Image (cartoon, rainbow, N blue to C red; front, side, top):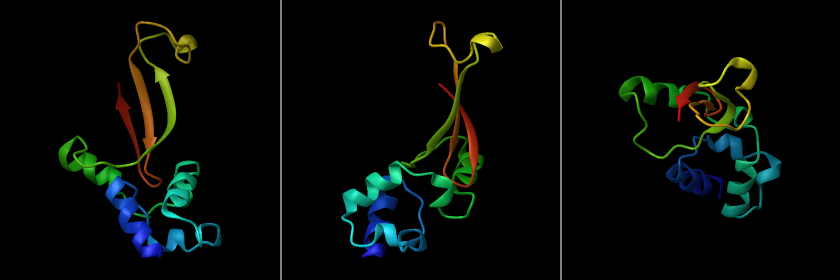
Length: 108
């Protein structure tokens, strides 16, 4: 069953090993329950140990396929340092993202 879940999750953009789902907390759970549990966990503890996201960005500079990443930081870099965490206009957001292994910075 773990293999089926890994294949379905990979189609949605998760980068998981089958080993990550063999942990007791995921046994006997439906696909939706596994998916929701993964969305609420720390990706660094569950994802493949390879620089998947980093490699994609280096190859093309952008992401063509769906990939699930976790937001680890956000700052409005158009504002002075003291006000970067406030919600105000104008805004230029710097996002820190991870796939559990690689860390990348994105701009919104």
